[in-house]
Image 1: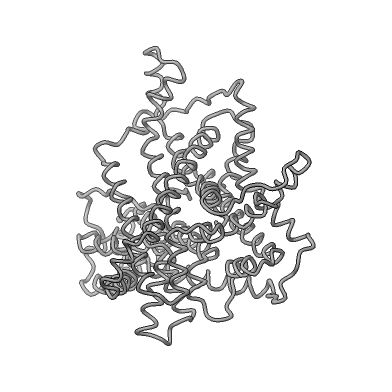
Image 2: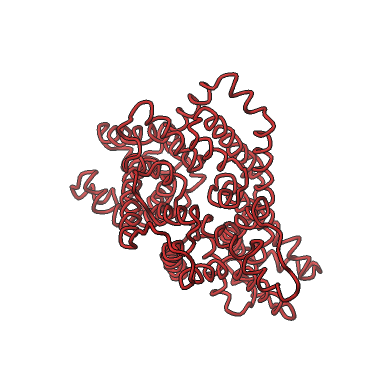
Length: 544
């Protein structure tokens, strides 16, 4: 399974042969469409209630938007997005080049360790950075013999930018490294034959081929920085997500809805801007020549500076958080008097993650099936609407469901079903993308052969299509499981009273300043995530 298999095909041929599902009985197609309509209705529920809540604010909501404090929140969010995206790009592009194209020693190990930063929750990274780089942190104690009594505070913009940068730079590495490995070697040879040196070839030939991948990674980083809650909350930086959470805790739902809509508008603006800049007719050519092995670039005298660069990136992004957790684990700090057993945390976290992943996979199945096997305009619209959850930050979804449950379904408020619905809305696109990609790689003639042997449409689907697509479906399930496991804002707002997961335990221990209670659940989260990432990368290598 390749990492690219979780991304749905963006463009599809319009002249493909009619597939099996298009010839199904009308009733069978209607069943899939009815289920898909129900799923899409649930996905669109947050948007409807956010608009309703914002409109209920009336003129007061407009005045709230124009307040200096609200404008400052917008400016803070934009500044964090621009700074973290720039820093992540400056780190991610060289890291991708070194681990993908150069003769860097142990580059596979550097790659796995670098990508491990991506699977660490931002709130956990932010807590450890506060301990390491704070005014009286570990760095200050190391500098004390040199006369440094107190470092500047890390909380605020600097801390939030540092955290988001090192959590998101792998979002740049993944697409850029994939583009590097697909570059057309013949173009480089053509540039060299025209007298270009190695630097000129990189700047004039290779870099233009990487620009679409760089822009895609920058978009993912920018969207993450806008929607992240953990880093800005721990670092006390007044961005959108933290402001929404504060308003929700104060039961000022109208103001929280106004802020949430502003956040959605900013997210949509980024997506529209990316779509305008990344037009199909202006894409740079990647890998269209003959299949050629790329030449490994010799680092020469830059080998040791490159090793030092990779070491610093891994040390700040991965090693420091892990070392801080071990320090708390074996240190002599105060222990939280309210102890929760690891078995209960594991049971709650794994249980709700597994149930959510199964629910999301089932909900995604009819949508992916309609998109590939009955690709009409109506069905494609349903699938596009289902991707709305990918635009909505988790805290926005939680806010909308609180608004809905408190007014229309009070019995659902602070129950596991409502929490699972929130997870499903947020992470449904992950499963749709993986399942749709798997279905797109299966020749419909296999199903036609099964039908010609007397199997019904549903039987052919169960005996032929599902086994062939199982790898992609399981990949989507695993992605949903891992993301639900470390999800924080939706869990904090919607969880039943007394229900604790690893994420909730880490947050409550930090909030109550019992840092030693963070170590075990934090290390457990990292261990599971890194093992899953290593398995995915190993399978990707086997396929390639």
